[in-house]
Length: 483
Image (cartoon, rainbow, N blue to C red; front, side):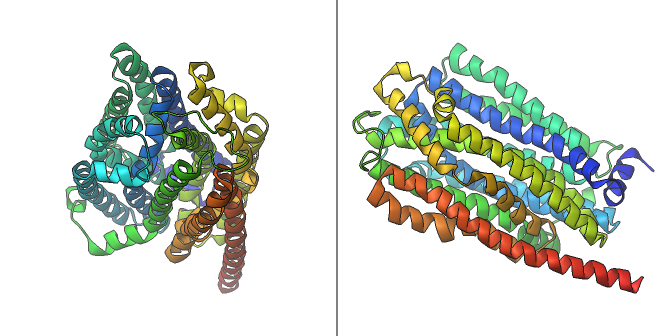
């Protein structure tokens, strides 16, 4: 029996605390490093190009979320199904899922690339709300043209890394993501400052780094020593497998899709109402004559900061995923409940730290991204970020629980509930609140809509999770009676 096989089988027998650390720590390092890269990238762009470029990058966020939503749908859906199949002892089925996931990512990657490149300008205008300045839109356009050319690589790279963790290689998945980040960090200043490519340099650095990482992953899946490998027979579309992948992956897909549209409407609200509320920070400082661009850029910075801590929570989720999937497939429900508890505690600690930093040191955080000495608009952006962070993170300590709860339903194959929870915060709560509060209170209303929506989503997730845990306990008791 190989070391890899032993690693997979230990999911059903080893100490849950040690297992969570073994799987979560590499995922956390990889996810946090990826988010840190985006933060450092924004710092390079903000200081090397200017605040207007930050505003342009903010407009690209929802577009990139839509593209990555399809990759997440396939990657996470396939990883969850692979874990369950390995828990059932069915390695052959797991390899068929792997092959179908690669084919799905290829098809979706090509389709999304063509659609976004052909209709890039209308898409940019839509997600900017039609009110962004031309300078801001040009930065967004320059960045997205290059990123979309590399969309196929991005889909395959992110998807295969999910499957690496699910098949017992969490450390290798971490090393690959760290390698991609390191390449980006070397190429970014070289392309942005040395070659003078600006935001285009940042995009090229991302595509090149992910391409190198993808080559390493392909080598892994073709090596005879790998536990799960590419098999020619697996590269045939199987309707049952495709439906299973999409049904489970629909939750992260909807989560990313909703986040994209929320970002779009948030950008629109800030462009239209930024500077109009009585408590808004600025009234006159502009980029390219547009006050709202300052608020959009500030929201982009806030997203980067919040995403760092959310990615750490997602690292715990990714560590929990193979443990939950394997033990659920093996009908060891007591272990499923215990690892869920451990993950919730860890996630809550992370989001509490985020709250303390964002609430008590918002100006210091904002100053990392933009040099306030560059001009009135950049100084105003720092002030807006400080205001927004202190409000948006009011209930952030409890957000970690909500994220873990939504992912848990996905990992045990409860696709409808996972999809419902992935949309409650954005569609049911945040968008209506944004439409009501932003016109009346300006940017402050937009910021306040976030903690109110978080509070409502936390209550819904908590209620559903309590019901599910009670059900798992009943199933565990029934199993013990039959033994």
